[in-house]
Structure formats: C-alpha cells, structure tokens
Length: 436
Image 1 (cartoon, one colour):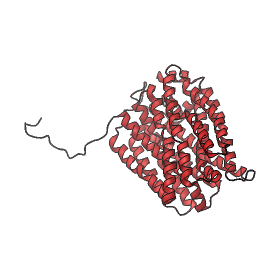
Image 2 (image 1 turned 90 degrees about the horizontal axis):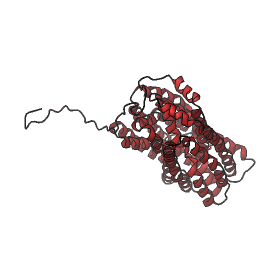
Image 3 (image 1 turned 90 degrees about the vertical axis):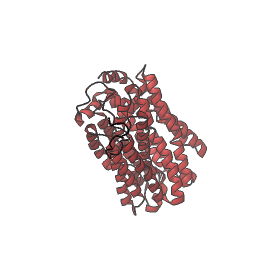
C-alpha cells in the first residue's frame, strides 16, 4: 500500500467494463439475434418494391429471400463453430454482427438483381460468423433446469425481429424508399457489436455441467450424437419442417395481403409484422416456460407440447388463409401464431442439454445449417414455385399465393408427427445426458 496521502500508481490501461452477468448477456445476445432477424426478414416486406424495380418472378424472389442467404451461411457456420469450441466466443459474435450489418447496408446500394443477390449472400456470411456461438454462451450462463426458459427468451428474436423488420421496414420504405429501409436496418447492429465486445464477459465453459469440458470432439461425433439419440433425430426433423413452413409463409404474407386485398406497403408490413410478433412472442415464451415447468416432472413435455400445438396450427392456418375478409384472415392467423411457435425455445433447450459443453457451438451451427437450408432456403423457394404452379389455375389477384400457402401449411402435420415420436424418448435421453 502507498503511504497515506498518496494515490496508487496508474497503469494507463482502459478499465475493463465486462461483467459476468447472465441477465446482461441474455439481453444483448437476444438483441443481436433480433437485429440479425430484422436484417434477414426485412427483404420479405420489400418484395413488391423489389419485384417492380427489377421485374422479378416469385421464383426469383423465393431464391433471393431463401437460398441466397443460405449459400455460404451453412458452410461457414460449421467452420466458425469449430473455432468457437476452442476460442473465446464473444469476439466472433461481435465481428459477425458487424459484418452482416455492413452487408445489409450494401443491399440498399445495389443497381440490379445480381448485385442484390451478392449482398444478400453477404448477410448470410455475417450471420454465419456471429450467431452459432450465441446459444453456447447462454448455456454457460444458465443451468440446465433454466435453459429452455433462457432459450425461449433468445428465441424471441424471430417474432420481435419480424415486427421491427416488417412494420418498421415498410414504413421507412414507403416514406423514404426501399434503399433507406436497408440503411436504417444496418445501424443497430453496429452499436450492438460494440456493446457485446465491451460489456459482456466470456463465461467459463461448461460451468453448470458435469463431465469434461476440455476436450473438443470432432464434427462427426456431434452429428453422430444427433443421429444416435432418438429424440434428437425426431426433434431436428420436426423443427426443420416446421421452420420451412414458417419461413415460407412469412416470406410471402405481406405480398399476399398487397395482391389480394390491395393493402399499401405500410398496411401489409404492419399487418404481417403484428401477426408474426405479438402472438408469436407469447407462443415462444409460453412454450419454453411450460416445457421447463412441466418438464421438471415429466420430461416428455419438451416434445409433447410442441407436437400438440403443431397439430392445431395446421387446420387453423388453413381456415385463416381461405377467408375473404381481411380482419377475419388476420385474426385467425394471429390465433394460429399463438400455438405455431411453441417448439422454438423448448427444442433449443433440449439440444443444448443433450450436447456436451464443447459440442454446443457446433451443434447450434449444425442445426442452423439444417434450418437455413431446409427452412430459410427451401421454404420460400418452394412456396414461390407452388405459387407459379397455381398461377394459371387460379389467376385472381393473390389467389395462387393463397393456394401455395395453404398447401405448405399442411406440412405442419408432418412436423407434429416427429415431435410426438420424440416425446416417447426425450425423458430417458435427457436423464442420460444430464448424468454426464
């Protein structure tokens, strides 16, 4: 200690502001995932302006919204996740957030469809760097019995991002043009990249788990674990199919409202955003909370609750999409969304609990790869192709989209079957995994 009256010598170092705070980490990681979804989904509400400016078909739109994003995302996501198993994860999240924000801004500077396609691929590249490690970090901040709830909060990114991207993007596009919508969407990510870098501490890996967190298993072992665990196989299949349906339906909802009912860009964006946000937020949070609450006594609830909800959502969506009165259609779509997304938080929580601490970033990247290819990639493309197929048969305004959306919504029944099959095994599988 220095003599009385003298101060400690200064080192000139910048003070470390990072905090080991689960609440702060979850808040910022959820915000980053939300902005990532905004930058991904804002293209949906800009379908009509882009279609008119570049003379695009629905198939081209489906490719732009879906597979363009998935092209490099699926490959880089796995590669980055392998790095995240060995290296600090928060710097990767910060850099990835910065990259996709810059690419989103680039989408507003393009001069043709090919350039837009390249910029869209850039958004996928940034998310491949930034997002695979988020679930791994959250898992190290929260114990197993609270992970489904924490993952449900993280899974709020799609519904909240849908509202911001659809309503906000539509309003900006109508008043300032579609290019400005991309520019505005890019700004929050730049700030969040700095915040996660400066404010959040890297958590000790596997601190809430039994077993060895030191060894990094090969990629093949992670994929084999998904295949060898019966419940994991069915949960991955069911969530992939449900994601494909959800991505496809949401990609064309605003366009359908504009074509069929003559909604303006803002009206269609706000309506699509509200339907995809508030009911979905309740669905995601309630699904994760119920899964943790009931799953403590009966672990089959982690699969049974989503399976039953998906069974209900398919007929509800079909009933909604066939209404000729806009408020009836939107009300029933909101009711469907109340049960449509209960699978998100619980499924993610189960995957994190089934995987070892050094498997989680890779398992998240692997599931994201499957979701991106099947859900984000094939969903919009399949719906666009179906719309083109139905166009000569149902030439009325927006009718081909209605038929295509109804057809793809039936696949929720297939997803439900996988969840109900997973419910038979998930309890035993979780007990074995949590025992170390």
